[in-house]
Image (cartoon, rainbow over all chains, first blue to last red; front, side, top):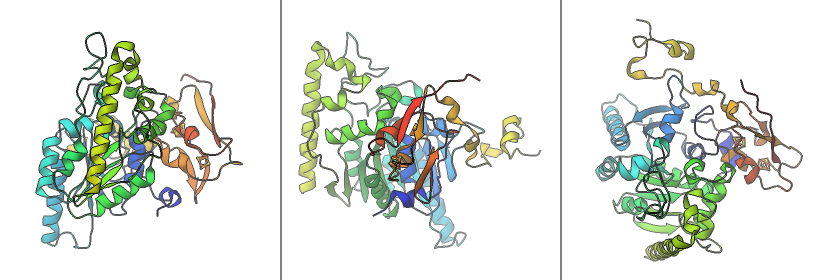
Length: 308
Length: 108
Ligand code: SF4
Ligand code: SF4
């Protein structure tokens, strides 16, 4: 079991001085994930909050090899680097025992939507890489537009709650399941508030031979509209309401890593977030029931999968 | 043409002096970008007497602004702390070993 004391003694590969919002969940995730291997890491980072805020020229917050990829191709970029590494090892230009980890990072916009084709392709081709999606449920870097990860009923700038619609009218896409359906060796869903679970998952992801995918819930004070000190509490509510179950799929075998002591109603998760405020109006309350129903169904299905 | 290497050179470089592919030759140079100036209104105060050094504040701080040495919290790095207050919320001791206090804002 890893201790925070050990992690704190390691050097940051993503350093202070970045321009991410106060209270942002992304650097917390990166702090833990980038410590889950001691090998050198090469990163391809899709356009998004993390990329923009850590590489505003001439500044960089990275102390590891890092490349900016366009929204759509972080997975292709890292696949190319990994293929080159293998070729150079074959030609004897890189020693066989020189291990390097290959990591692609994207937000939900760059992963669920724009970069999905590249990700699916790289996973199918079996490159030895890890893909991390920091899922903050929205295009936070470009003005808060809805993405395929935006949950049902959330107000976003392109699905604004008003007299016509009560926020986004579609259910979010379940990308973790879609990646599991690729049959790759390791897929997991995690959250920064449970740092050890996140660390263990990142470590497994780096260690497996072949593609690994991590989907990590990322509290976003700007677009979720909550008090910025509450990020980890909100993430905790996502896990306790089963809105964001923590689980992994290792070689096809499902395992749920966290069962809430008492499964909370989704209202607890919706309440503190301004993006759901309109749901509490009398005329929109039916949608809260819909959300609850959908969360319950997904949680039931996940438990059945874990029993297979 | 001499290529820009240091932060100062990069800041003032003409396009001809930029490194090819705008490779940044100065890793982690954002450590010289003091985001502590963003803090508006509140800042964390560390109280060592009640701290149990669980390091929750360290792991959950989005700005790597909790100073830890040999597994012990030494204090807050105000050069980078943006004042979000996550450290106070996550601190498990009673009373809290990190407390957010009002801070006078000086506009520079
Ligand atoms: S969270 Fe509180 S008790 Fe834990 S190390 Fe930080 S200040 Fe100390
Ligand atoms: S207030 Fe926020 S940025 Fe400042 S030390 Fe605490 S967690 Fe870090």
